[in-house]
Image (tube, rainbow, N blue to C red):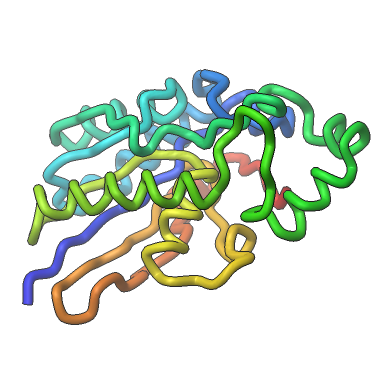
Amino acid sequence: MTKTSIYLIRHGECAGNKENRVRGRVDFPLNENGMAQAEALALAMMDKGLAHVYSSPLKRALTTAETISRVCGCGLSSDDSFSNIRLDPWQGRLKSEIAASEPELWNTWISDPESLVLDGAETLDQVMERSLAGLQRLMEKHKGETFAVVSHRGVLKPMLSGALGIAKPRFWRLHMDTGSYSLLTHDDVHGFCLMGLNYSEHLKNLPLVQEFE
């Protein structure tokens, strides 16, 4: 029985997190606290035996992944499968402004997010499909090894939910802080197993923005 271990990592903090904006594909870089989170995260990953780290191409994720690669001495690749959800009509906007101007759509996001359909945007189910396909490809490449995926809340949560078969509405049933990591394993007998979610002990001396919308 060959076990593959995947560390699912959310990028460090950026201005979009702190200002409570919908990020989507807006290419926010890490802010000062986000850089500190990335450094602390990288130190926490040093003993995990990472063979490689894969990242969303967006700056906040890629800089986090670059930090891990540098500190852990492992390879690094950018992978579009893990780029953030595309939310063109909303991205970059304050969540409070969207809630005030489009209350019905915002309520769908809060109560039944998999049902949200915006013109020019991806659905969470579409994100789940593309990210799981990317994850499956990497598991075949790294069977029996340990690797990491650095991505976004809007990708990691649907991908993990799909891997575990969590029923809809599923997006709000998981929580991942910026700079946190989770551990997912896979073997041919049991399939996927969530070994740990939202590890953040390494961030205990750093501020965390709590996002529940």
